[in-house]
Each structure stands twice: as C-alpha cells, then as structure tokens.
Image (cartoon, rainbow over all chains, first blue to last red; front, side, top):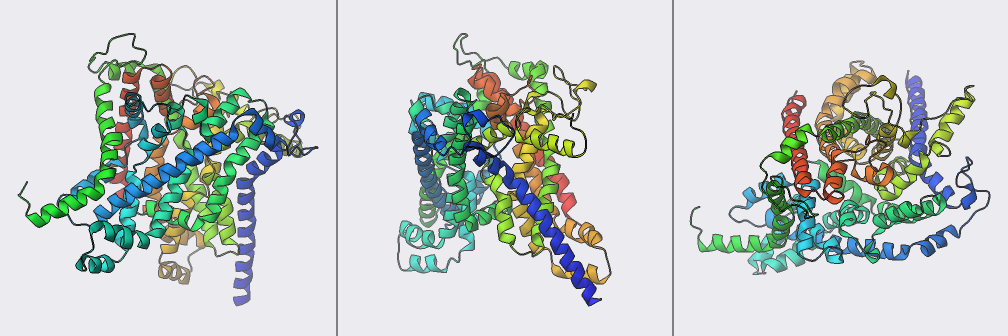
Length: 277
Length: 323
C-alpha cells in the first residue's frame, strides 16, 4: 500500500514536470524565434527555417544606424527614472499621512482616494492632453513625467505597507521631540524599504512600457521613448523583420533583467495589489 | 463641521502637508479631468476649430446611440472578454501545477512569468511577425503538424488579416453571418493575450491563495477517501472563490478599457474594424478626427459600464464567496 502510494506520487510528479516543461516551452518559444530572427540576413527573413544559415550579429549595430535607438533608450530610462522617484516620494508621503498620522477627515479622504482607483485612464486622457497643451508642455519631457508622477494605487499600497510596520519607534521619536518630517524620513522610510522597492520596480516597468500617453504627447523625434520609437521603426522599416526583432530583443532585455533581479519584490507587489484592504 | 481645537488643527495641518503633493496631482490630473470630461461631453468641442464651441445638450450621447460604429466596437470589446475565463482556467492550472512541491518550482515560476513581464509594443511587433500567414511561425507549426497527420494541403488561417471569427459575427453590422465563421484577427489577439496572461500575476495570486487553503480541510477529505478531483471541486475551489472573484472583477475592468495597444501596433483596428475596441475608437475620435466632445462622451459611457460592472460583480460575488 505504502509502496503503491509512493509510485503514484512519483508518477504524478513526472507528469507535473512534463506539463510544466511544455508550458515553459510555450512561454519561451516566441522569444527564441525573436532572437533567431534577429540574427538572420534580410534575405532569410521570410524563410520557413527559423534558424539563420548565416549569423548576422551586426544586425544589432544596424538598428542604431537606422534609427536613433540609443536616444530612445535614454529617453525611456530618463522618463521612467523621474516618474519612479516622484511616484515613490509622493505616494510615500501620502501613505504616511493616511497610515501613521491622525487628523480629522483622514478616513473620509482615504475612501475618496480608493474610489478613484477605478477611474479609467481613458476618461482623464483627453482633458490631460488639453491641460498639457494649455500649459505649453505638449511635446516636452515635463509633459511626459508630471502627469504620471502621482499614483492612487501607489498611495494605497504604501499605506497598507506602513500600517504593517510596528509604530513603536515613531511614537518613541515623537516623545523625544522629533519633527514630523524627521520621523517620516529617518525612521519610517528606512523601515519601509521593501515596500518602496516594490512600488519602484512596478512604476519603473510601467513607465518604461507606457504607450498611450507618450503617443499623444510626443511630436519631435528626439523625445521618442522606446515604445514610440519601435512603432515608428515598425511603420517605416516594417519589412526588415530581422532588424525589428533585434530592436525588440534590446527592448525586452532590461525588463527581463529587472524582473529576475527584483523577483522577490515583484511577487510581493502583486500580492499587495491583490489583497483588498 | 465642528470647531477644531488647537491640537487637532495642528494635526490636520501636518497631515495635509504630507498629503499635499499627491493631493495636488490628484486634483489636477484625475478629479479635475473627470469633471472636465463630464462638461465637455455636452459640447461640440472640436480641435479642428471649424465650428465654434457650443453647448449641445445630450446630442453626443444620442448620436452614440444611433452610431453603428459605436455598437460594432462595443461588441468587439465584449468579444475580447472571451479570453477572460480561458485565462482564469489557464492561470489556475499553472498555479495548481506549481503548487505541487516539484523540484525547480522557482525556475518554472520565473519562466512562466516572463511573457507577462515583457508585454508591450516590442512583443506585439514580435507576434505580428509570428502571425504572418505565409512565413510566420504559428502557421509553420500548424502546417507541419497537419503534414505529420497526412494533410499536406492544409493551410493555416490568415490570422491578423482575416475578419472571420469563432462566433461568426458579421463585419458591417452587428449580427451573425455564417460565412464569417472561422479563425481570424480577434482570435489571434485573444490567443496572444492568453500567452501573456497564463503564468503571470493571476497565477501568483492563485499560488498564494492555494498556500492559504487550510491543510486540515484537504487532509480530512483525503481521509474520507474523496478523489483528488472531488477534493478540488468541493474543498479547494470554494476556498479560492475570493481570489477568482477578484481576478474576474479586475479582468472585466481591464478588458473593457483594453485593446488599444494591440489595435494601434498590430492591426490599426482592422481588418474592417474587427479589432477596434472602444478604447481605440476613443483614441481615433479624439486624436485622429479631433472630435474631443464626442470622444469624452464615449469615454464616460465606458466609465459608466466599468462602474456598473464593479457594482454588479460586488453584489453577485459576495453571494458566491459566502458559504
């Protein structure tokens, strides 16, 4: 009986591996095709054989010759870095006000914040575009960064995180006469590093991939971020699939690296977002 | 409002000063715009400036009602929600597999998560190539499988170029047209969505929820000799109900506003408008045709839909969760 059970468990584990390996192959196959296609000469792009007969590593250099790809990279990282710093800072301050400070009207205002998390970006997009036009920020870095620098979701997430950190330390500091800003910056913020890192990684990735807003904001070539640059590349040089795939590989690599490096924070972030407060 | 004593007033000032940067951004870029959108939807606001700005009452909403394009794109938007139950089953399946404490669980989890972390324009350009009917990898695979089974004449679907669809919906007007039955651009986008969703955030949510199912419950059922399927059906699945509910609500909210990127990058809403969702319609009305007032009105209808779905789901979901 026991031996039979063991065999049953082993057999099950074998099939679990088979299915998981198949699923992993399904997840990875498009990436494999992308990398192989990025190394093909142009003449083989429409060949049914996915493996290049000649490996053209210089396709990657050619991308930089045909479009200002370095510029796209820089713009994406520059905008995403600014957005991330500002979102984390404004969300942490607001989260602190909602989680750690006691003031009249706090809970009512927090509920109002929660309610706005479901407002679709499509509703605010047109008025925000018009606002940017009126503020003369259309087609500028500021126009890409500022409207993205505030997040109700980030506020919610960091509030939840700050509520879970024990308040003894800041109460002690308050008794010692520390100013509110000192308590926030010197005591609460260091304790919340994992939560801040989680929000930072999500915000960075979101901004790096963001498409709709840059699409309507950017008119000049030198302001194009990667997604906008990729779209332009696809529209103008769409038949050069090998170069397009090389550009896509370069677009995706930072995301994969960031994900692998920050996986711990990633998983936490998804669960924080999924646990309703 | 009652009068505040000095200590309360001081606390209020401190609280508000921490909230201030976020609050200003929130009023300027969220609440203000919603109010503005509401006002603008009752005007003929038009960026081309041909006609002077005018209050036109509910004309935009009335026009929407008789706008056949609006209804077609509304149906398209709903069509893409077909992917939601498939994504839920796929995510749950992946989570159940990962939950068996197999060797290399972290490696599998990481690999399965990769598609959802890399979604975006680059990956959509990749799928556009994969779906090429003549040399794309998808049809290569389908046709070689058909060859292996002795059907060398088989040709894969035209994917992004085809208006055919699994529900045989017609092209010009809302309704069923038998010769439209097949596989086309809509299925292509749904399948790509599944590739991106399975193994992603929903799998992580299910994995965490599976970790929270009390072991006493499953062990007790096992002692009673229940089959694995029955344990899943009667013990695990009800325990996962709150997670499933959350995923459905988020899926609806996301799905109703979705489809913009795919349409803009992969299909330009075509062929023949079959992949144009309300989000892409709003974009086109606002930033291609410059009919801002009308676009605002459509976006508010979408907002209303999302709001209604949330409310209905809350009511229905609460019943489902309590047992």
